[in-house]
Length: 278
Length: 276
Image (cartoon, rainbow over all chains, first blue to last red; front, side):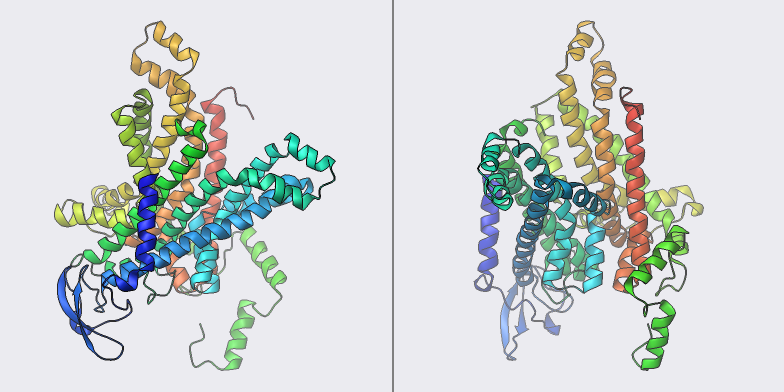
């Protein structure tokens, strides 16, 4: 868990400090510096028209853009999408799950709708939503969050069903506390630990899915530097220049691994009974 | 669809032809009635019926998925059983490490890694493409091995993990001690007594994994240039071909639900205590 957390912290720092880590504007391109091997030196033209000496640590793509800069700036997109998607999915899932678990007449209706969404594989929902709305950062985040909402809803609902029988909830009901206050003030705080674990898994999945969408060309527009877009651009020339695919691929894999390790660690810490088994 | 230079009359006539001038509820009603009678509509882009289109693209996807599930099941279940048998040992820890890794490495990263290693460096298998089974079995299989192996990794990680947990639980039961006490060979104890009683959760996860498999098919077919349903989905989205998108998603969801129904029904066979 420490390794995962440490690596994520490092990534956040890299994402925030990207402009000062020897990068250039990730959208800059220069026809003279196309398809450079990693470590090659060259020049790149700035927006003002000045030639800038630059070492292409990870090489350049077929437009002459610096892969290193694009990968580092891509970290921002990935982390943002991961975190935002998890937050969106959790918020909707919490409200729906609390409602389904606590307000009995809503339960059947809500859960059947959730079952319906779960019958469609996540990636297809995301692709369909993006196709419907045209891709931008908010639509991609929502598209990734939607298939995760039923999973959060089910988790919260099952927790509510057991927590609502606890004596302190009965006491609150007996004291005439209003339903919203019981749901959010008494029940929700006791769901936090499993939700935190679920949140990290959603985050890992969202980072992965965003990269897949971009890679397939249905995600964020190609000029936005994301790991998926860099790989999509590089795949055409994969045989000659594999580095365009490998560097963002390694960043992506290690990031998702770090988030998953963090999630496993959190689960083991918060729920020691599960730790030994799965 | 009408092109850039269309007049407003042309646009209006296309809209009327597609029925887009009618209220949403009516459009949905017509669509639903047609779907129920097996008509998925006409593709805007390919200009043929969506059902025909899906039929044309079915073979590669079916072949890829079948081989993937086959590889995954044959590899992952023994791995999971051995890990549970040697719980806490080096093999167990290695498998758990592999499974976290398997969940984290994206399908397309793995795909390119394998292409680079197996096809470009070693030259054992073709880089990409697809051969119909009618063109000969060996060329067909050669083109399918790499995509299936790529796709099966995450599936192996998933099934091996659940097999391990489920067999581990069975191994703690009294009947395992009884079986060992009466001197049964260890293999028979593991397979007939432990694995057989751990079968239901394993079957469940194979069914749930179909969702991951479908997602993986979309990506794998794009990387390996396989003209199947996954590739069709992406092409349809890029061409904003809505009838095809709807049709493919409906088809995939139907397959997912149908397979899970079959798995639910198989419980009665795997565990005679379950009756429907």
